Image (cartoon, rainbow, N blue to C red; front, side, top):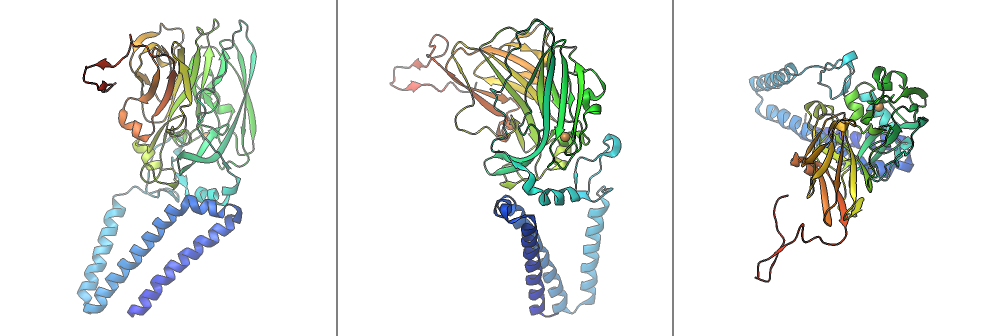
Amino acid sequence: MTKNNLIKILVGVVVVLVLAIIIMLISIGSGSLSELFMLIRYVLLQQIGVVLVLAAGGFYIIRVVWRLHSKPLAIALAVLVLGGGLFVWGNETHSPHFAMPAFMHTYHPGDHRPDLPLSNIMKFFAAYDNFEKVEDIGRDPNDVPPPLNRDWSETVEVYLETKEVIAEVAPEVFFNYWTYNAQVPGPMLRVREGDTVNVTIKNHESSLHSHNVDLHAVTGPGGGATLSRVAPGETKGFSWKALNPGLYIYHCATANVSTHNSHGQYGLILVEPEEGLPEVDKEFYIVQGELYTKGKTGKKGLTVFDSEALLDGIPDYVTFNGRIETNGEPRMKASVGDKIRIYVGNGGVNLISSFHPIGEIFDLVYDEGGIGSEPLQNIQTTAVLPGGASIVEFTADVPGSIILVDHALARMNKGAWAIIEIEGEAQPDIYAPIDMGDGVEHTEYGGH
Ligand SMILES: [Cu+2]
């Protein structure tokens, strides 16, 4: 084989690859071609890079053997490649079906693996035009239903639509979220102890997967999951009675459960006690969640779900309400003197949240969302367990920003924070700089 022939082969491989990509993009539809190219250009560049490296490596080996006319060297190289291949192959567990990633084995009940079959990835690109592109996936933390203020039981209708959408985790970082009602978390639900709740769940026609709902407030098998599994386009309903007051997570419980949850399928339901909760000035709704994506945190374009990172419990993003809070206008606002209540949940699936308000103290914590127990008082940080919740309350005493965080603080870098802006008069008897007489205003108190 001459040098020219090898170069021709190399060029041929690249041309075929580029043509295949162009044909794939055209088959998806010209309307979304540029948008899709923008989303997957980093992945394409990476794949082209891999092909170039393999082709150049092959060229190098053949060239060396060709030049030296040495049979023993050719045999040694072949043995090296074969031995290396066996070493890698022998140390991996092997996929029972053709899936991404290929080398993974797990023990989920029913043998439902957390990864996605390669055929689903093909289906995803073929159905790309059908997915709703959601402008803002992060549910507004102000989106809290008002207190019920009634002393009788009712039948409450709840409507959930499961929908797979595309939205930004952070600027220019896109993810294929699976949602309830096209936002993360799903809507906050509010019923009263003793109410009968009729849940209607519809799976949008554009979904590629079945979904369902398991509400931790439900007394009954699967928390509703056994009665609510819906295939794409299907609608089902079930009825349950709210026996226990408290704040509860709901989430998708379709196998593989951890895969569905870590695509964004979770929310909170508050079952008010018969007598209601004490009145406050502001109520907010926050659910912490984790996203597992291929590549490093902040990799731009369409990021693909990473089931190995899920099993290892190392998310690339830890979010308060589905996406990274931008550095723009804070979405939560209150005034000095306001009594604030936050309904906090943890959609998981792996991390325990150490929920903490920087620059405040929780006056009350309904630990683990347990209404009926005596609330804890004067708490700095409270644990919010995966599949668990907490109700925290405090009075905003001074103006300024309160940053809510998961105090496992490395997670702030992955997005686990949100700001409540407190407006109002300064309260120097509570918090003030000290005049050191040097004309410099000393405002650096350090830490929190
Ligand atoms: Cu689901």
